[in-house]
Length: 193
Image (cartoon, rainbow, N blue to C red; front, side):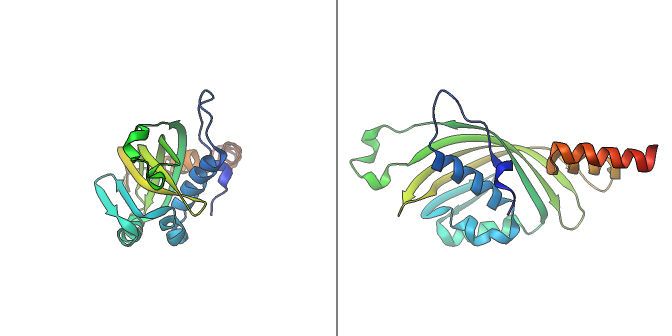
């Protein structure tokens, strides 16, 4: 699984966010980017969860598991960049009718970017995304009850894109700033010096 430190978005200083929620968010996106973590990803949702990602929807554990498998069918690699989290409360206390099990543990909006690289053509796609999430507490663990993602694709970079452009996209999204500087230095010395 990816280093969890990479998956740390900005949080508002005016509205403190529970450290457990912060840890859950970072862990969820690290799991999301690791193809081998299917069951851990499914385990981030409660049995009644509703998940909407783009135009795809799933309700309950069985459908969410199928959704996760389909998410990786044409994707060789995926990397999320978390930008900002906005904690929110949309529902008044009265909407739970005194049933504490229906009360969210947390609710937030989050924005970020994602890069995917396809299996067959090595086509890379970049997209901005925003999500609305409702977390519940189940036996001491946080889980999603509702998770909805809206995507806005930036463009496709297929086989017609130069190797240099592909390397720039890869380096910008996948490598940290230190590795990027080192990679550029090596490439410059090898090919341009």
